[in-house]
Length: 400
Image (cartoon, rainbow, N blue to C red; front, top):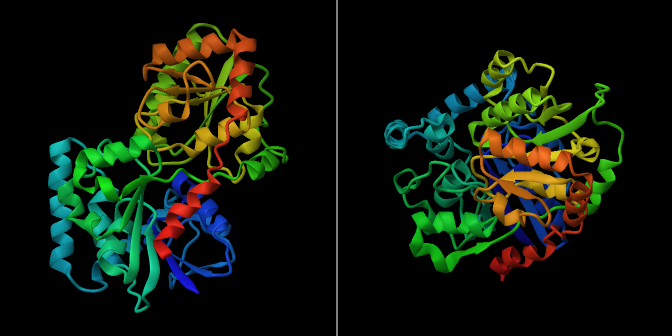
């Protein structure tokens, strides 16, 4: 029996974790024994872990890393990681080096400061796996590269590597230890190779596996909007982070309100930008117009009930939310950036526009004023086959 280990940073409610669950479901074969190790030992998506996958964490918290209680759990995990396995000087040195790199790039990202601490302070396993898979860049990649014994190793990149702030100095040569490196889209692969051109021959594209049938079934379950609003509903699904550009979305909503159009914009997701966004929403008088609903277990009825799906982000890898919206027949408006443009053909199954309040508002009004075009884009989106089940073979070839 082949033993496959997957490592991931957290199991929070986000796109990469959703894609991992679907991949683990698809790998339910009698010849494979699957294991999962979560670097942070935390996340609410653990409740969806398939029963055929063995969780290797000695302790695990289902608390979201975004809640107050969850942040407390996270802080304790970081402290334990610092003191586990020794190497205190190396761990401190990594924090200072990463901080120096981030200052050069003009943005301090707390998670990336600590990825090495968490990787070096992770659990150690004596077992040798047939395949070890780092399912995210950062801590899980460093951990699998340096602290896991395996015949073969593979890694997944889910983000525009340069826009996300990673550098060669931060990575410390970890990618040389992998046999195969998969980007989740062509643009993700190209971004990674712009930093690491020497790895061109061992990189490939492994699209996210999406269970479209299950999404459609869950879209028909009870739930969705409950506020009784009678106008047009706009929906965005994604973490409340700088990457997702909600500050621009809020400014867009202000333009729509000033135009007198009866619309309300809803967001499903949580993140570290909530307080700042709530302040912006209040300052612009949009408390009833731009609604942060938080994370929900089943977002699919919301997609079904929305008039438009908006995904105006600063950068992407490959958006699970766009794939879900397309599966459910939403007309999608997205910013013209890496990741988004690979998923949408402008004017055929969605609209791409500049990431400015004026351009987004113009695209929204264009579709809300043209029901025929809106329905046509939704139908074309629903026809797309985004399941990508054939991708499995590329991973399983590493076990030959």
